[in-house]
Length: 191
Image 1 (cartoon, helix red, strand yellow):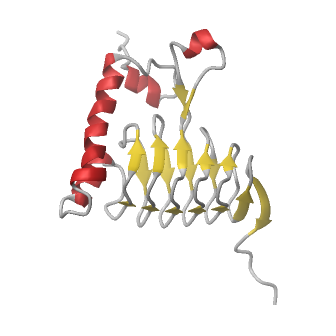
Image 2 (cartoon, helix red, strand yellow; image 1 turned 180 degrees about the horizontal axis):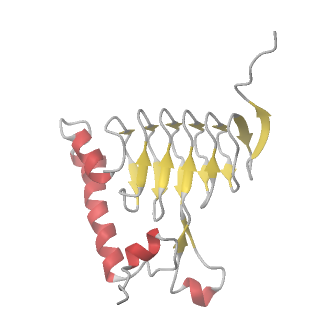
């Protein structure tokens, strides 16, 4: 017997899904209510960390988000220890977004997993998502954009305002639109 997939299951599996179905709208409304608590009513009260955990249950307990923060679902954000996200960040987390431990994300960074068909008739019905992975000890500069399906290696720095459309290896400085590696970082100094 074949199990019928929900739209959320299709989305998380990277399959085309209907983002405007009643199911998906209800999930996003629930998320927006939690975001309202995070960004407005519980901002820096004794309940603030509880709200972060409610929004992002798959993140480390010491994960920190500086409001205002926006995401689609929250439960697709997997953040390691001591991840810091500064204010104004947006994460469209239809697919898994993995952020390695000790990574810093500057103000206004946008991380997108959602993508839409180029054909207008298909775009009216479907979208799909590709996961994003950011390694450990990275620094993502202010107002950078990370596009669907991108992997950024450990200890890499993405310069402010960059648009990352392709994978960036570990230990690099990448800048520009589209982001390009301009130099290696963290190399052993020759004696």
